[in-house]
Image (cartoon, rainbow, N blue to C red; front, side, top):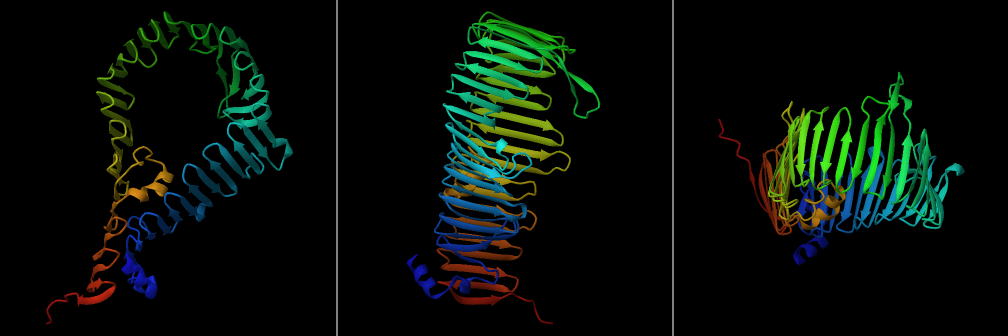
Length: 479
C-alpha cells in the first residue's frame, strides 16, 4: 500500500491507464469497464467508495453512509443516507424527503395537488401547503386537525382525539366519539351506528352506478350487518338486490354459517372446530378440522394440508407445497406465458426462484444462500455471482440495500455477459481482478503491482507499474 501511494505521488493515474482507460490497483483504486452494460466504474478505499457511469445513469456512493443516483433522461434523482435513516426521491418537479419513515417532506406540481408541499412528523404532525389555499391543511395529533388522502382515508377531521373524529372514504362519512366506542355512519343509501363492543348495526340499500365503459348501469349490492358483544355474535346479509345474495350468522365459538347461491359454509366450533365449505361457483368441496392444521379440498381446487408436516395445494395455475414447514417450501405460478417457481429452505436460508417465458424459452433465475452468496441470471442470459450476501436474501428487490451495503461484504464478484461473451472476476475489491473482452484478457494482482494483458496484437507485462516485456502476436510463417 505504501509503495502504491508513493508511486502515485509522481505518476498520475491517467498516465498509468491502458489504452482502454482502465487502471486497476485494487483495493486502493480501480477504474474499469462494466461487464454487463456499457460504461465505467471506479472503486477506491476497498469497499468504501465507488462511482459508476452508464449511458442511462450515473451513481456514486460511500458505503454504507451515502449513495446518490441520477437518471437524467427521465428526470429521476435519488439519494440515501445510512438507509433507511434518510432518503430522498425526485421525479420531475415532485420530490419526497423522508427520515426513518416518520419525518417526511414532499412536494411538487401535478394536476391534483397544484404544486403541493407536504411535511409529516409521523404520527404527530401532518401539513400540506399548496398554491390553492383551499387545499391547505394542518393536523396536530391529538389536539386538532384536518387531513386529506392520508391514513387510508379521503378526509379526516378531529378535535382532542379520541374525543371526536370524522372520517370519509368515498361517499361514507363516519363520526366517532371516544373512538372507537361510539360511531355513526352515513352515505349514499347507507346508515349505521355502534356502541363498540356492545352493539351495532349498519344498512345499505342497493344502488345503480354507470359501468367502466359508460354504456350501461350496474347494480351495487346492498347489505345489512349487526353485532352484539363483538366478536361473539353477528349476523348479516350481503349482495342484496343482486343475483348472489348471501346471509351469515356467527356465534363464537359454537357456530358459523354462510348461505348463498354460489357458496355454502358451515362451521362447528369456529374457527378451530370442523368446517365444511361447498363452493358451487368454483366447484370444490373443502373440509377442515382445527383449521389450518388439517385441511382437505377436492374439485377445481385440491388441498391436502397437515400442518406442519405436509401440505399440497393446487388451483388455477397456483401450486404450493411444503414438507416439515419451514424446512422446505415450494410455490409455483403457471399463467402462460409466465411460469414462476420458487424453492425455499428455512425461510431465507436458501431461496431459488426461476421465472420462464414458456413461449420464447427465455428465463431468469435468482439464488440466495444466506450468508454465503447471491446469484442472478437475467432474461438476456447475463450472470452475476456475489460472495458474501448478508442482507440481500431478506430484501431481494431492494435497490437501496444493494447500492449501499452489498459493496461492503461482496469479497468475490463474477460477471458474464451472454451477448458479448465478456466476463470479469474480482476478489477483495480488485486486489485480484481478471477480465475477458473478446479475445483480450487482463489480469491484475496486489494493488496492480503485477499486471498482464493479452490482445490480438500481443502480450505485455507490468511489474511495479513498469513495462518489463512485450511479445508480439505470432503472425504465421512467411511465404
